Image 1 (cartoon, rainbow, N blue to C red):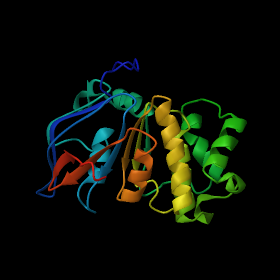
Image 2 (cartoon, helix red, strand yellow):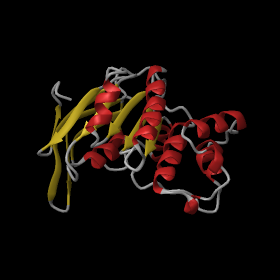
Image 3 (cartoon, rainbow, N blue to C red):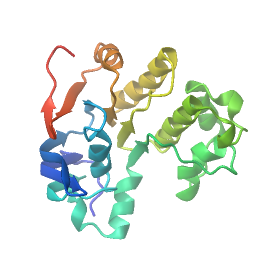
Image 4 (cartoon, rainbow, N blue to C red):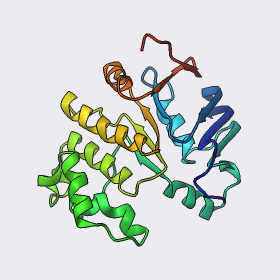
Length: 232
């Protein structure tokens, strides 16, 4: 698998469909995410936002059509190829999973540890401070609130400075002030050239972010993906 970082399209869907349990969740989805682009993904609950996110990094495979990530067909990748692809993608899941026996700081640094890289104590402290978790760095995940876990998940997703960040409702359990701080982190990463895709139902968050960065808004409606109008 080629991983040069010079791809013209980091994620490309060509007439993608996904079915589960006999029902079609997504149909005829075509999507191109260029390097350095910023997209929001919105739609009603259950419309397929999480499914689309999972298709972007090979957690799910399309039942029709083609998904290319970093110019490679996801379906044709070997296990090593999938691992190499995922090292370049940071994912913030709705259901944040952590190792409960490790303190927060070690959980956030885990992607570096697994890849054999040492986490800079200063960089880790800065990241935890930015997401408002520095005072909790020694606590275990079961001691954290839902919002604190979500912030930790975002910190963990970006600690390796991936090329692409996929975030599924990253601000769903935090207040407005923290939502803005988290979005500032994502905006800064985008300005560094990172590709951002955020699934959210928060239209106010979308509007406030669009005033700072040229974000495009995608909407899932009736299993199809469409570009949202200027009303957003």
